[in-house]
Length: 101
Picture 1: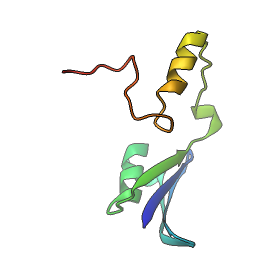
Picture 2: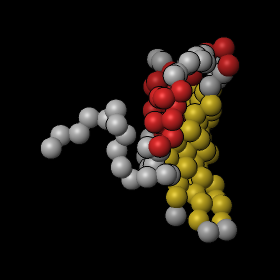
Picture 3: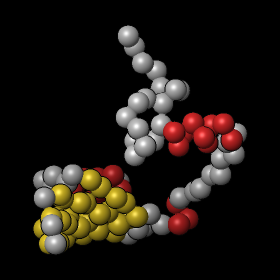
Picture 4: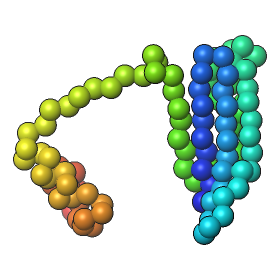
């Protein structure tokens, strides 16, 4: 059974949901909300909301004005290499990764 933690961050609150999933089943294990004003920092509010939760994976949603995107222009050779060594296509390491003998 996998346990997924979702975190919603806003300027005033931190909301957390712990969801468990298995074959054809989905369940909510915990729902928590912490006010950012009650804590010295946003990090402290996140820690308070997630204390005691043991997820397998985590995803966070942020306000749009607090995030940024950056477009990268890569040469075609680099794009071709990155798709050749993706985990879904092969188990060999990427040519750019450092390996020690």
